[in-house]
Each structure stands twice: as structure tokens, then as C-alpha cells.
Length: 339
Image (cartoon, rainbow, N blue to C red; front, side, top):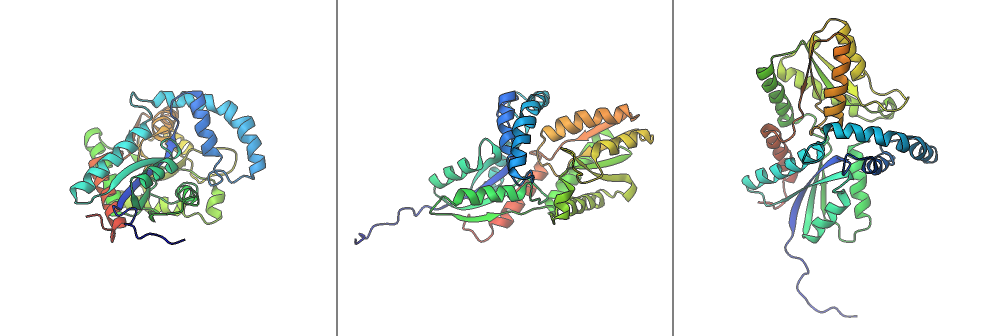
């Protein structure tokens, strides 16, 4: 069979940037939370228990009993616009698109979720229809972990396993040491202190992962410490003025320590009257920051004898963070014809 000489099918190639966050339920209701948790906790990157054993635990214990409790927690932080994580991620993507356009780049910027909606495969399909032949994926995780960043990479590769014409892909591994990211954190803390005064200790609480992941070679723990050290240096903090802790422990296994809740309880018992808490590993406020830290951990500190608990919000769509995000994107876009 001879082919006729015809014009190329697609000569209008475009470039896209996809900002990918963890995900969130579609609503603060038991059914929506159950669907979200099932997708999230079924990821073998997240839970490394043998599949057959975990299937019975997840479907027989966790989903039936945890979904309604989690839905109540989500309701306590839900806004009129919806999930805070979704709202902030969407606004970050919009702000990033505007900044890149101002800097002379012609790129499409989308947001996607690893779990929930808008799903990453859906967004990648839409970009294909729009003619995007170059795609940069930026996970919303400053520190790399197999449980988070690698799971996004898995989803990207799994999606394109079924696609014949795969675009050029670039994946951001981490930006834990990026000067713009550290400066955005520094300015966030300093702005808060300028308005509300300064606590006796600054607690930097990162999301936890099982200790086993560290023993198997996951670099997340070390990367969190690196970020914390740079932030402390930027703020001029002595070693005894800040602490690094890990939150969101789940199950009976040992996780990265020290744990956030017991640490702040001990501070209260030791007579520390005011602490300030920031979550540098989260770029958007979400259930783990607004409910777990700003509500639950706050109560535990106050009940242990503390007097003032101050939560410093995530970077969200702050001007310094959007500028840093644009710097990260420009660095990774280098060499592609976006101008």
C-alpha cells in the first residue's frame, strides 16, 4: 500500500506544565471520602503491605470505619469554594500560568491530582487533544519520596503505556534546596512574626512515612532535614530554637520520628508557653495542616500546659512562592521553544 504525500497531521505543537498535588475528596461526605481513600490507600507506593493481606484490611476495616470519621474532619475545614487543597492548587496553577506568560513563555498550565479529580490521566488526555507535544510535570512535593513523587511518576508512565504518540516529558524530582522555595518559606515566617510576634520555638512539621521506607533507601527523611536546616539558617535560628518533627502517623508500625503531637505535648509540659508551627513539606493548606495541626495538635499543646499555639499557613498562592514556582518551571523548561 502506497501512502499519498500529504501535509503533516499536526504542525502546531504546544508546551504544557502540569502541577500535580496529592488529591482530595470531591465532597466532605462519607461516600466521596470512601472513594478517595480507596484509591489513595490502594496505591502500592503508599502502603507496602502484601496486596492480599492489605485488601482485607482496607475493605474490611479501614474504609467501613474510617471514612465517616475522615468526612467529619474534612467538613471542619471545607470552604464555600470546596476543598482547601483543591482551591489553593488551582490558584497556584493559574498564578503560575500568568507569571510564565508575563515572562514571555507560551505554555499551557494545568493542575491535576494523583488521587481524585481532576485526575492526572484525564488532564494528560486533554493536553494531547490540545496538541501539546512537550509536557513538564511538577509534583507539589518539595521533598522526594517514593510514597509521593514516585507515585506521580508511576501514574504518568502507566498512562503513556497505552499511548502511541508520547510527548516529550520532563519530570521534576524535587526542589527541597531551591533558593526561591527556601526564601518563600523564610518570608512567610518573618511576615507572620512581624504581625503576631515570635514564639519560643519554631516547630517544622513534615508529613511522616514509615521508618521502613528510610531503611530501604528512601531519601525523604534526609531531604526534610536539609530543607529545615536551610530554613533555620535563613531565619538565623540557633539549634535550640527550632525542632523538626513528623506528623500523620497511621497504623502500628514505627514511622519517622520524632512525632509531632508527642513533641509539642512535651514542650507544653516543659513550660514552653508559645510555639509557632509551620509545615514546609506542604505547599498547599489541606486536611493535614488545617485540621491535624491547627486544631488537633493545637489542643494537645494547650492541654499539656502551653499557652499560645500559632500555626503559620502554607505557601499557598503567596507572591514569593508563585515567583519561586515560576523559577523552577523556567529552569526545567530550558531548551524547549516556549518563547
